[in-house]
Image (cartoon, rainbow, N blue to C red; front, top):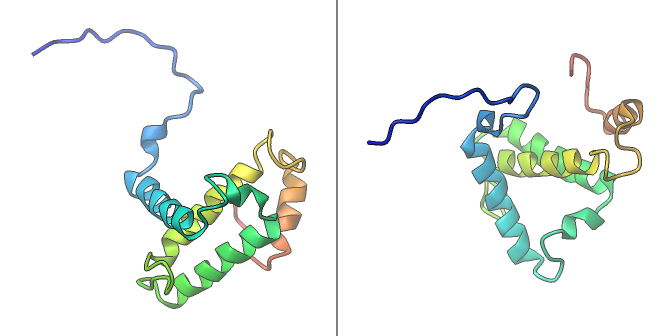
Length: 125
């Protein structure tokens, strides 16, 4: 067996993707795979043409169905509603990156947008 020497590596301040549970990555990938089959003509980035409001509504619909039945699945895709929530949250996070939507980076605007959905953001960090 090869033994490796531990060396200093300057990782301070870098993200640690291994902190993300693989189950979340798989859930989002499954929803994306379904979306690519459902909308084959839109390509991998077709979701980018959706408005923030469309993404929020889709997320909120699946969230409400998840709250109603945590084991519930989407009738169309057969995938858990929570997986759809995770995917829509990913889309929203991506849209609000600094190089994306021109409102990104403006946390006050983002908070106004989220609050307009009726979601209680009190206590969110």
